[in-house]
Amino acid sequence: MNQDSMEQGETITLPDGRKLGYLIVGEGKPVFYFHGFPTSRLDLLLIQKVTVSKGLQMIGVDRPGFGLSTFAPNRKVSDFAADISFLANHLGVDRFALLGVSGGGHYVITCAALLKERVTRAVVISGASLPIDTKGMFRLNKWGFRLGTIPILREWLAKQQMKTILTMAKDPDAFIKSKSGRRMLKNFPEDLAKLFLNPEFRDKLCRTSAEFYRQGSDSIKAMIQEGKFMKKGWEVDLSQIPSGLVYIWHGTADTNVPVSNAYKNAKAIPGAHLEIFEGGGHTIIFDNIEKLGEILSS
Image 1 (cartoon, one colour):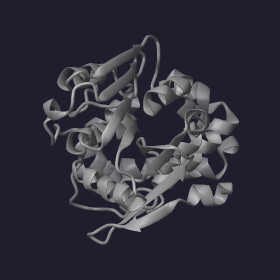
Image 2 (cartoon, rainbow, N blue to C red; image 1 turned 135 degrees about the vertical axis):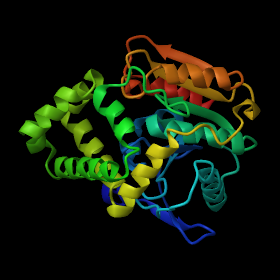
Image 3 (tube, rainbow, N blue to C red; image 1 turned 30 degrees about the vertical axis):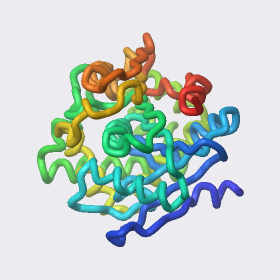
Image 4 (tube, rainbow, N blue to C red; image 1 turned 90 degrees about the horizontal axis):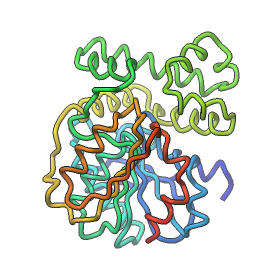
């Protein structure tokens, strides 16, 4: 499969008529991947080397309103479990692992509760508790969550973020040298700013972030919707998750999603395997790909 076709991915039609977009990378044990915020199924391009050494088939799924997946105006976090179950049946997959990073983490936990008979492992990296704990979050993110409750302002903020990301994606090198790019890097957490200086990483991150906004105004609506979800509590009973099913990784220096969120999740989920990375930021996944592969393939 060439790069263009790999990045395009595929869609299926769900029972309610919506399209669900997904991308498959690698062969072997199936792992459904839930992307961050704001990214897409193309996150797999950043972590695809885990598929080769550990014999994994990674299936990145776009949530409604992002990438190739149709926006669903009245959905809930728990509705995504039905989408994943339908996709798994379509692909002929009976049992599977789950992996979610950042904004995809609470979807992993929700699916672990609702699809527990089918889930073999559920790994949450740098994920949020619900509602998200913003104490210790870096300034721009914290203000985004605070101001996101104001109707007119939240639309403006979301559109500004989309404009910035799409401008950056057109010419990442030029953007990073611009005044806006330098200001953005200055406001980035240190670990992400360091990775962003790597041209290959920057190019792939720009592509997956731009794909998040593929549907324009519907992606803006979906972005606001996701922000609302993260301010609400859990829709499922976490105590019903089988003991030992969930693995939680988090860095102590994470200012995108503070480490307090990991402790809250671990306390609420039976037998959760909590691993705290001292000094680690929001990007700990990239320094621990081999270890992640071992957990997912076991």
